[in-house]
Length: 330
Ligand SMILES: NC(=O)c1ccc[n+]([C@@H]2O[C@H](COP(=O)([O-])OP(=O)(O)OC[C@H]3O[C@@H](n4cnc5c(N)ncnc54)[C@H](OP(=O)(O)O)[C@@H]3O)[C@@H](O)[C@H]2O)c1
Image (cartoon, rainbow, N blue to C red; front, side):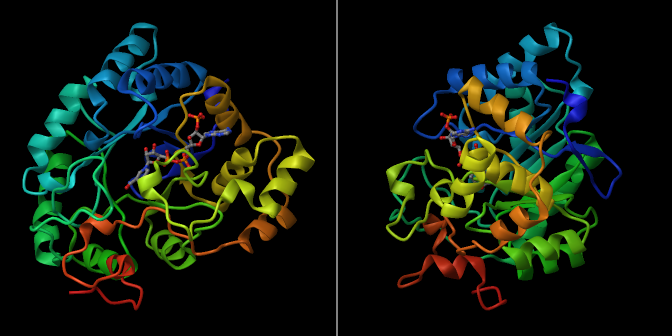
């Protein structure tokens, strides 16, 4: 598919970022070689934006796939590659970025994010009940030390832009106040049942582009990341009815809505039929205003990625991580 058709977002720096990317978190269901094969296939199909992270454990395989597509004539400057520093490397941002670059076999990243604003280590794949003895609340001074190293990455030319992920309005207010280099994006959970209107409006009003993760509602996430209260976007009657009328999969309705609303979804798929459909659907047959309004009305405030492993004291609830009263919990 001609990638010129893919909508773009203009960041506050003037740079253009494709308004849909490929997620690369294989979790329990896709091995690093499977994700790398999807990366290669997706780029050849027209994707130009990849959402990577060191913690996904597959950047070296993705690097080999990138080498493959470059040998076929895709140029580095045609791609938008994001990676992220994991929670146990907040004190070691530059080394962590260099490691991702070495694994991805790139000279620079287009975007580097602080994956979570909490610094504690927990093993990949651990239970949501696991607690780290080192867990701490958000401490702004500590975050800004990490952010200074992020800013240094821009000076060093290792990252063209820097950004945040899993932030809240009160935390971002402080970062925007104190940053020398403002975050260009905030990566956040966004899907029809979790629209986060206050945070979405706040970041856009401040010139920070929202990147939407779990844009389809992460139907393949492992059992340990599910709770009985979770709802299923692609089974919502409004989404299902729009999909039926248009003879498309409900996943595509979620993605059309995301791009038209103004966020940049990063759907994951290793299935060529699905990742191609996901790219194509955001370039054709936009949703009507009535359909957009109908989806706006089905928000359930249903957060799927709750972050329980970051809780830092007894008897806390995961909501405390997300500053529900507009104040940072200590
Ligand atoms: N910053 C953060 O903290 C954070 C947190 C979570 C996720 N992320 C990023 O966001 C990305 C996406 O999130 P996610 O993987 O959890 O969830 P998602 O993109 O909402 O859902 C992916 C699932 O949907 C299926 N799917 C994709 N397209 C489909 C289609 N057209 N029809 C039917 N099924 C379809 C995929 O299966 P198939 O493979 O079979 O197509 C896969 O199981 C991640 O890969 C990662 O890059 C970031």
